[in-house]
Image 1: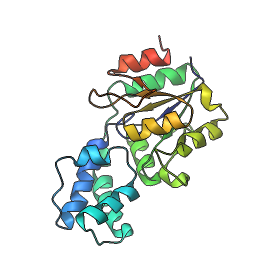
Image 2: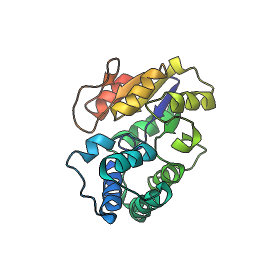
Image 3: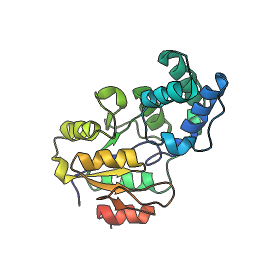
Image 4: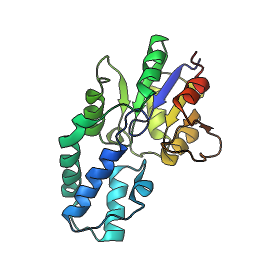
Length: 210
């Protein structure tokens, strides 16, 4: 079994992507923008600031980033208590923990979102290490977030697995030199070199969990 597993948070460990979408839509509608039909696909796995830049360039948002993100996060944090773990993910997490496998959460979300999400699903305790977008210079698809996690754990990246639901995150895992499991919300081809999982059982098999 692997020595370490680094979990993406939104959409992989926690079923939070729909809430992120709703919060982004709320921010867009607050300035009179009609969200495009492919919004979810375009922002999946992308950090808040690059999404803001897209809003400026494509939709003419003029709000400063600080005000824009406040509108999104006000909505998000008002509804964070509704979140649930992704089916099958928490069970895998707990089985790995029981087997003594080191684990961390590595997210492109900001620190306040990471902490709020993990508290909501009961994973904030126990000194678990987390890497948020605020903890690194470059977010995913750059490998820095996963390499930061490996540094904190003191484990060689080559001895580590990444579990991701987005191309952005899976590309970061591969770039970090880690065995990367691509577990999307809907079946699709993953980046070349990933292990593509259609179910939680596939993830278990790739991780060597009996």
